[in-house]
Each structure stands twice: as C-alpha cells, then as structure tokens.
Amino acid sequence: MHVFYTPDIQTRAELPEEEAQHCIRVLRLNIGDQITLTDGKGYFYRAEISAATNKRCMVNILETIYQEPLWNGHLHIAIAPTKNMDRTEWFAEKATEIGFDELTFLNCRFSERKVIKTERISKILVSAIKQSLKARLPQLNEMTDFNKFITQPFKGQKFIAHCYEGEKPLLKDVLRKGEDAPISLVLIGPEGDFSEEEVQKAIENGFTPISLGKSRLRTETAALVACHILNLQNQ
Image (cartoon, rainbow, N blue to C red):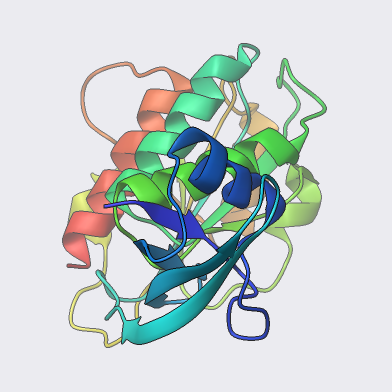
C-alpha cells in the first residue's frame, strides 16, 4: 500500500510537491492508479490519480476513512536531545511507530546539544506514520528551556525519570487507570542526567519521580521505554 502525506487534502486535491515527485517519478504511478492518503489529522483517503506531471499529482477522492484513536488520552514525551542526532532521530521514528501524541525537546543544564533543527525530525515523523499506518501526526515542539517548560500549565499526570537515589516507583505502577482520556507527560534528561536542582524544581512543580526499570538506559532508550509503557497502559 502506497501512503502519501497530504495535510491540505480537504481543501486541495493535490499531493505536496515532494510527495508528488515520489509518487510519479520514483514509484512511477500514473493516471488511474489508486493510492492512499492521510492528512495526519485522523483520516485516510482512498484516491485515484487524475492528472500527473513530473512535479504535480492531482487526485480524485473516492472514499474518506476515519481512523479511531489507537490509544486513549494524550501521551507527551519531553526529551533532552542527544549529542549524536542519529539517536534522537531513531527515537522519534520508533516512538511514532509505537504511538504517542506530542514531542518536546528540552534544553537542560547538562544538555550536550543546545540547538536542534526540527525540520528533519518532522520528516521522520511523517515517514513513520505512513510506514505504521497511523492517521495522526504527533505534534512536534521546538526546543524549550527546562525551567520554563516545567512551570507551564499542564492538565494531567506529570513524571520525571532520573538516576538519583530516592523513592521512585515504576512508571507502569503509578499511571492512573480508568480515565476516559488520560493525559500523561514524561520528562527524559540528557546523557548527563538532569541536575539535582532541576529534579527538585520539577518535584516542586508537581512532577512525580519515576523509574523505568533496573537497567541504566541511554537517553533515547529511556524515552522509548516511557513511550511504550504509556501506550500499552492506555490501550
């Protein structure tokens, strides 16, 4: 099945230029061929190519298909990006395949990467929803200062995963169940962990310290584990 991301398909029956080139020049599809589209907002569309050039692909919508949410609530991961961007990109891809709703990058005291360009991450998210047949594109936020982020209003459960000693129940054991639309946010620190001051400030702002298990995990692995736990618990 060929799936193409078309965020404006409800107002414009045409594939974006990059998707059109992939459709016509790479896959060599042509007029009359049927394809599947997604707007990233919860809908798939069965469509037929009506006109095609090297850079343009017009379609006729044959059927609109609503995809029911695959999990309950809103799952938000906030992560300090790794120094090696390949690892952050790997996390973004795999987390999207598993399923979550929102991704924020954090600038922490011990962050080794203070600037991040989200354009490539955005493309990875799009590719991953197409590959995993999801009709909803996760929201991608720009990098935010840790202290500013934790003081923002947030309705739902808030957790921080860190490596310091202290009482830290497993994330799977403290997620509230039975809610119609649970909202959950997990903070994942940089490769040098959050500072002790950051952990304390997070707790003061309503975040619950949690554990992701007995193993010491890399940043991107910890974020993926948290994503998986949130998703499974909210199936």
